[in-house]
Image (cartoon, rainbow, N blue to C red; front, top):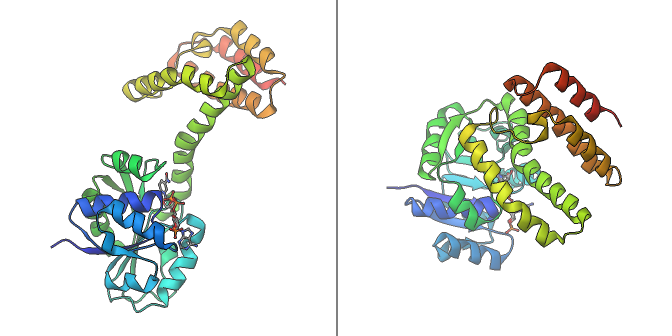
Length: 290
Ligand SMILES: NC(=O)c1ccc[n+]([C@@H]2O[C@H](COP(=O)([O-])OP(=O)(O)OC[C@H]3O[C@@H](n4cnc5c(N)ncnc54)[C@H](OP(=O)(O)O)[C@@H]3O)[C@@H](O)[C@H]2O)c1
C-alpha cells in the first residue's frame, strides 16, 4: 500500500509534488495552506479535495511530511512542527537546493529523520511543474537511513535521483541559478536592448523567441563546448567593437552583461580552437576596457 503524506505550503512546487504523488498512488492526509481557499484549490488540483486543511496539526496523521515553503521560512515551520505530536519515525522533507535537510530537525531529533529533495528544474507554476518534473534529476541529501526512501520518492515523482552531500549544496544551487534564473535575466536584457532599438517589449520577445528555442536545441544537442556561434566564436573583432560602442548609452548592467559573458564566450571559443590566441587577447582587451 502506498504511503500517506502531508504537505505544508502548496505553492508552485508543493502543488506539483502533491499532484504527482497522488497520480503515483500516494494518499494525501492533509494539504495545509494558511489560506482556506488556496488549500481547497491546491487539494482540488492534487485530486483530493478532502485533504484541504489550514490546521497544521492535521499533518500528524502522516509519517511523511513535505515542507514546500520558501527557503527563508523552513526553520520557522520546522519549529512549529517540533511542538506537534509527530509519529515516531516521521520523515520530514523539504525541496530547497540550498538548505541542508538538517534545518528541519530539532537539536535532539530522536526518531525524526529529514531529507532535502531538490528537483533540478524550474516551476513557474504547478501546471508547468507537472509537465517539467518527470524526467528531471533530483538531488537527495539528508538522514543516511532515509536516503533510499528519498530516492524511491523521487522515482515515484517521475524524477531521476542522485545523491548530494550537504557541503556541496551552496555551489550546486548557485550553478542551477546561473543556468535557469540568469537565462531568464539574460533574455530580459536582450528584450531591453531591442526595446532600445524601438521595438515594443511584446514585439521584442516575439522576435527573440525562435532564437531562444533554436539556441536551446543546439545547446542540448551539441553541449556547451560546441553550441557557441556569433562574432566571438568567429573572431569578428570589429563587430564586437561596434556592439560595445552602440551599447554605451544603455544602462551599465546591460553593458556589464555583454562584457562578462563575452569574456566567458572568448574562453569557450579559444578552448574549442575557433579563434587564435591573438584574437582572443584582442577580444578580451576590448571586453575589459571601459
Ligand atoms: N520554484 C522553483 O522553480 C523551485 C525549484 C526547485 C526547488 N524549489 C524549492 O521549493 C520550495 C518552495 O518554492 P516555491 O517556488 O514552490 O514557493 P511558492 O510558490 O512561493 O510557494 C510557497 C508556499 O509556502 C507557503 N508559505 C509561505 N510562507 C509561509 C510560512 N511562513 N509558513 C507556512 N507556509 C508558508 C505559501 O502557501 P500558503 O500561503 O498557501 O500558506 C506558499 O504558497 C523552496 O524551498 C524552493 O527553494 C523551487
